[in-house]
Image 1 (spheres, rainbow, N blue to C red):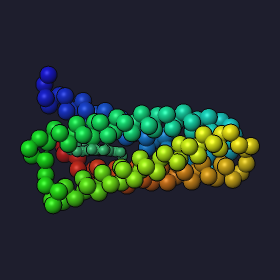
Image 2 (tube, protein in one colour):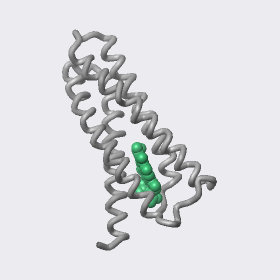
Image 3 (cartoon, helix red, strand yellow):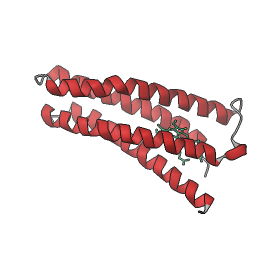
Amino acid sequence: VDPHGFSVAIRWLHVAAMAIALGGAVLLAVAARGRAGLDGLLAISATYERSFWLAAGILVMSGIGNAAAFGIGLPEPASAWGAAFIAKLLLVALLVVASVPRTVAIVHLAALPASVGTQRTVATLYAVTALALLAILAFALRLAHG
Ligand code: HEM
């Protein structure tokens, strides 16, 4: 296997999973503010939650692959690159931990009678998720090499 081609494929997977997680969260945050029916919104949210956890698993595995591709050349934690990498990892850990109650909330909300309050909660949950992913993306772009 060509090692360069392999690491490009892993990075491609990393970026594709990021696009699914971020794109879905932005779409749901915007849709929850519109006039979409709540039942449809919650059904799509439940589907997104499955995609989110699949994407999160792919991001962590391919992210480890990205780091491994640096080999012995991986920058020290004390360097600017290393500090950005650690900040990114902390944000990823925070997002993953905070996403467990978000998934549980979506499942429970789907079982409750529809209300305007529910729609606002869904909008807030996905706006916060999208902002967290954007913050991670900001650090990721500082890590990216050409
Ligand atoms: C444990 C989780 C993660 C690890 C270990 C990780 C690791 C890395 C590393 C080492 C790079 C630099 C790749 C390079 O320059 O060759 C990178 C790039 C990147 N990461 Fe992550 N990452 C993780 C999670 C995430 C998440 C959750 C997102 C979603 C926002 C994300 C989005 C990106 C993007 C867009 C790039 C730039 C693309 C590229 O250079 O190929 N990463 N990641």
